[in-house]
Structure formats: structure tokens, C-alpha cells
Length: 80
Image (tube, rainbow, N blue to C red; front, top):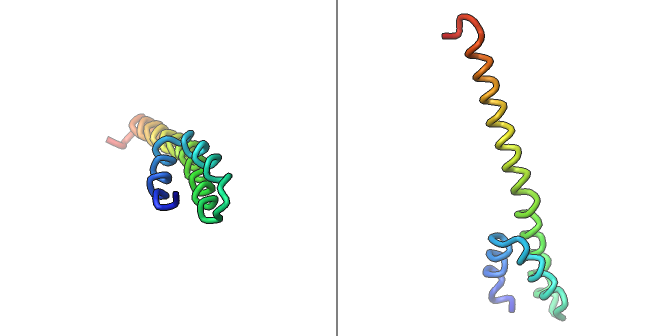
């Protein structure tokens, strides 16, 4: 099962909701290494589901701020 761990990680990163199901499935296993893979899949799914949208929102806010600052700079006299 752990030989597919990079596949599980990739699936968790691409489809975050799948990371939760993979984690639930793997965390029931007896092997400590398999449970660790499940925990890592859960963390990868969480990071993609929560952190990535926060990064996108921060980038959009930064672009909006830059647009607003350039608009204000164009209105100031003598900045042509």
C-alpha cells in the first residue's frame, strides 16, 4: 500500500476531497507507515483546500491594490 504513496499524495493534491477519503481508508490500517501516509494525504488535501484559496485571495487583493495605486498615481498632477 505504501508503494503507491506518491500517487496517493498526488491524488490528494489534485482532488483535495479525495485526500480525506484516502486518509480515512489508510488510517484504519495496522501499519504505522501506512497510517502516516494517510495522515500526510489528509494534510495535503487540507493544504490545497484551505491554504491555496487563501493564497489566491491574497494575490487578488494585491493585484487590486496595485490597480488602485496606479489609478491614484495617474490622477496626481505632474506624474505624466
